[in-house]
Image (cartoon, rainbow, N blue to C red; front, side, top):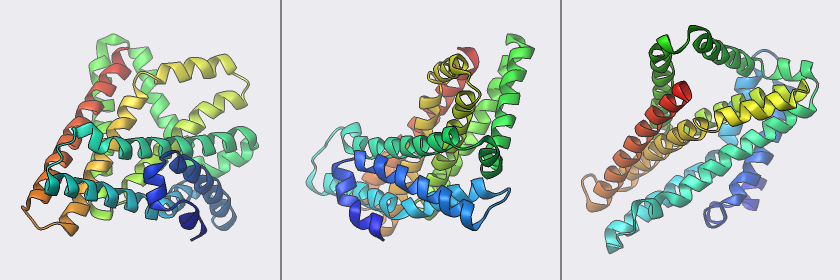
Length: 271
């Protein structure tokens, strides 16, 4: 594939900003192809699948590179700090998410409203569902904020669990979760720009800054945990020192993901 030759995995790992550029290009191409071949009510979901498939080689390569780093750590007893070992892959996933977000945001702002509503109807329905929960929280007040916390918390834990399971079973499954959430966030914020509600756009953007990065970070961590554990099971001998290190780091990443989801939900409801 042309994009694979332009953005080889080793280049992406060395220079994570390439993942941002790759995600933007792939997202724009996926929107065009999905709308051209599969126009209709499910185009939004198909766009997400196209993005996932196109990013699959790069993401698989990142997981493979991460697992090789774990092997080197175990074999040579380098004992690098945890975040030094996994910092680059976290940066790569963050830039991938931002790239997908930027591409869909630009398309949403520049395209006619009718096109956006038809192409991304799946995401728009999900936005309406999410905003109905948020507005319900405003109306009910703090008395029932605990109930809202439960709803948000278990929904986010479910998404996080899917990111882990899909990454473990498929390797690149977490990209589906990240691409879907990036598209929802992009469409939600772009809707205020299209209506000329610049102040509302700023207010809404500021309002999600405290909790959204924490929750999305939880999805990143869960996806990385599942991906490196999957690669470790395939490539390493069970219960070898390399596998034990990978398993330990995977559990720690999963624990951090769960902690991030809990923290994000509390911040979203009470701040």
